[in-house]
Image (cartoon, rainbow, N blue to C red; front, side, top):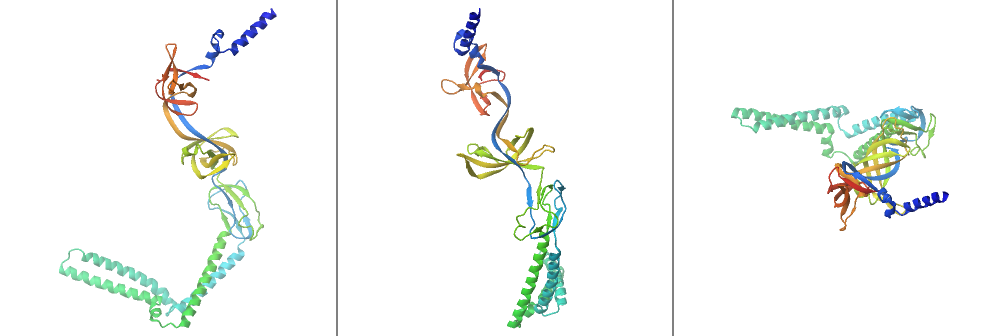
Length: 406
């Protein structure tokens, strides 16, 4: 009895290995086939790119000058608005410098004005703006008179307009003379200035310009001593405290506060040289994150590097995919992720498994179709394929059954 059982097991094993023999009832051959109904669906062709996530806006803020930290107004995790003051340096000495420079500029300007203009400063201050206003009025009256002359007028009307035109021209000339007098041009152009007077005026002018530069720098330094948020975001890092000193050696490189916008991120990834020609700016991408498999994100290609990098013999191109971060998603900078970039797609097309497509005797695409319980070979025209499903352009109808292998 045991011998019969052992013999039966051997026979069964032999049948499994001899899959091509009809003695096994053809069951092994049939097990490699699968009947699939031709149906319509959507086909999407993608290019995959692996990389890591980072914040789209991530700014490491520094002060523009050296000094002592007077105040830090934020802590890590605080939400801030664009323009909000985050920190300040002690500006006591800067304010004194600015005040002194302002006084020096006023003195230098008065000195220059007294030397450069042959009349009193009040004459200059009043004549110039008044003359400019008079020139504008005279020019307007002149334009109106000219327009009136361009239309048909009677002799009496022409005479009146001509008088207005002459008055406007006289007013314009007088105003221009007043402007020249206010600026002192009549004296300068007369050539009555001596060489000594010229250099005295030039020295006063240089003193005024130097005082202006000093004041401008003081005001600029005051602005650099205040750190404001360049965009809305959350404070990620605060690396100083009140009383810390920033030396002339490290103030420009030392990160004081790091600000990020948690609502926008990007995936920096690499694409193979074979696939990169199909990747275009603005293409839709579906992003999956390794650490958060249930999170699916949608973004767009925002950057494609024109330069290649080589890694282990592969030629790769860096791309970036930007996307909005859903609230409460748990995404963190540095997480590994994959972007499936949609390079082509069709909706409502006939689809069959790619494994169902073979070739006929002429090497053309063909499938095996079940017709009246018989299998016949039929040539087809194929379209797009995503590797798993293939579009059938012609040769099959919806609802027909094809034989696929697996």
